[in-house]
Amino acid sequence: MIRFSSVTKRFPDGTVAVDDLDLEISSDELTVLVGPSGCGKTTTLRMINRLDEASSGIIDIDGADIRLADRTQLRRGIGYVMQHSGLFPHRTIAANIATVPSLLGWDKPRIAARVNELVDLVGLDAQLATRYPHQLSGGQQQRVGVARALAADPPIMLMDEPFAAVDPIVRKRLQDEFLALQARLKKTIVFVTHDIDEAIRLGDRIAIFEYGGRLAQYASPRELLAAPANDFVADFLGSERELKRLALISSAEAEVADVMTIRTDDSPAKARERAEQACLSWIAVVDPDGEIVGWLWTRDIDTQQERVDQLELQSFDRPVAHDESLRAALGAIVESPVGAVLRVGASGQADGLLTQASLNRALS
Ligand SMILES: Nc1ncnc2c1ncn2[C@@H]1O[C@H](COP(=O)(O)OP(=O)(O)OP(=O)(O)O)[C@@H](O)[C@H]1O
Ligand SMILES: [Mg+2]
Image 1 (tube, rainbow, N blue to C red):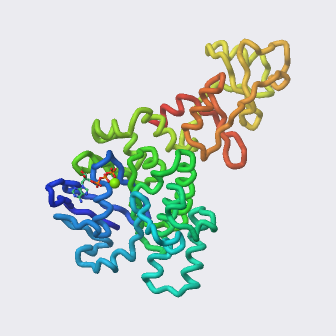
Image 2: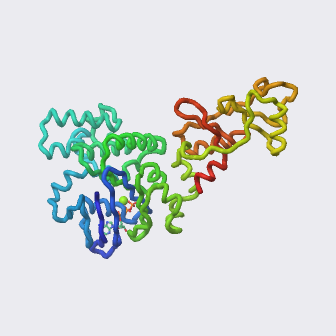
Image 3: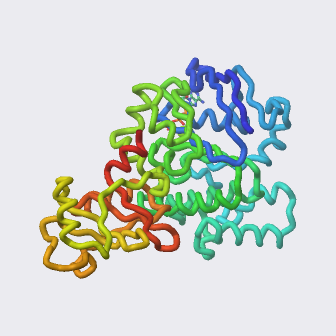
């Protein structure tokens, strides 16, 4: 765990970049520092590996005050991805990635193997390894920065806006890959961004900073979206806060709706009577095992037939899986003529219908 206790950073010109910060960053988690430009995110990061020294207060890692650590020793255990990739311009990509292993005195074959492994891991083309940084795009350079920071497999990673230079589509892919990587590597990651959506997607916990380097709120993405601590945080989270919350809740967590049903072996006359009595324009159809198989418009029910399964059933076209978000469910609900979507489990078996009421309950 990385702990900040009453940490302030005042630069010689009097600028207070970080103001009386208390923050506990859990091991093996991805903690995001987010906030407007100039609010002290980079400075907070740089104090962890002592590129900037705190003016007052204490930072400890696993209980050991970092001021007492040997700086070189400290940095070997911490990978650092700088805000603007920060690659060495006169070294090849391979040499850049090999920086820390070389310092640690690894032998050449071991370094070469590790470089190959990392180039592959961050999804770079192997032939780029012999190029120089200026021969790469901004997004490729950022990947090299990530590879370099991972090289000696440090338990802690500090990442300063590592995906800022890529377009939204590539960024989303990098984020997905990064989440998958973190699920495997389980590092303690402190990740800086000013993009709140990136913070919500990636973070186990999010620290939102205000101007002047003050911590406005520190919470999980779900807690933040459900209960912003003040107007600044609410503003920063942006409009569509409820939609962002829905995106973080799986459809499995929602309660299925209590809708009126009729069995396939019941009579159409009974179906129509029940729906009309309840002033419903549609009714769901279940088989004798209780599984939902379709639905009918009340007004279209042909009461001349004997059994409901002789009628032409409407189908629920876009079922939602348990691991899909309620945001996806909302999309399907809006598209559904009856405002309901079928939820299906891993086996493909439907286990109920989600409606707007299910979403409201999940949010409240
Ligand atoms: N060496 C320095 N001397 C004086 N002031 C500094 C120094 N480095 C940073 N600052 C100031 O400290 C404040 C915080 O800077 P910092 O780089 O930590 O912000 P940031 O949140 O990372 O911003 P951005 O999103 O733009 O990267 C800013 O007002 C900045 O101008
Ligand atoms: Mg910064």
